[in-house]
Figure: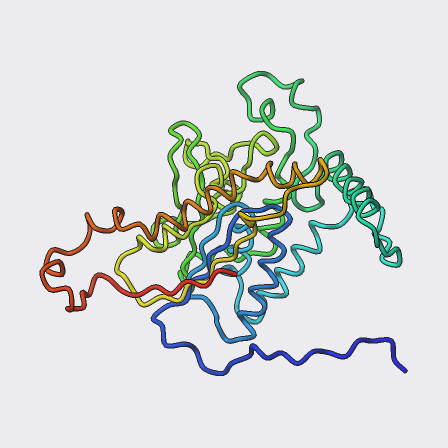
Length: 317
């Protein structure tokens, strides 16, 4: 009898596209948890839900570039290639797949060992420790205020992403970043910008690990410092269209009370990502944000459909 597990029949595959004017995929920041976004995209593609617009922040910006910068038949392959490349052990020590971790304590030790490996050796094809270390560089330089060099990520993006395809606007592409000097949130959009690897890297330039990214004389940090979800950017876009939006939440705002220090840190450390994500979701539903912009001719005729305002159906995954 074969040891291979039988393949499960995929029940989410459909043949007809839903009756919406556009489909949007919204992907957040969340580090290694961004690998789940690749699986979600694969399921959407198999269900014939190919997005017309991808918007991402931080690791979501990288996944968005891999999607928008490749033809439909190569997107899943490129996503898988990226994640397999960046999760290769930095010191060449392979994972022992035969070693099954059953208890929480052993699982914790294994995770900590792998975390130390990334801390000391970086992530292949993504980032590497800065040599010499930052405290040996002159004050005021990018090298002095960051621990890692992201040159490998730029090379990886240039290898896996066709930026000419992104700039051809076959699929709308948006990534968010924060201007270091002003503290303002900025979106780089393929409808208004000539997208290059620096725009993607800027969206994931989380200090103090990564350096700020320079674009046209300005420096940018990770967009998740202000908002971890680009939902508001999609809602505010004009002209309005009937939209089916899929938002992938990587951080849950709810959870059990932590029993060990490690889980306490996990719940607390990325809290700003969860808060900013939740704030972005809730702000889109608050009437006070929409009423000042509501067309005057609709306020007196509530039953009349206004061309400026279209329905948006959002599915959170």
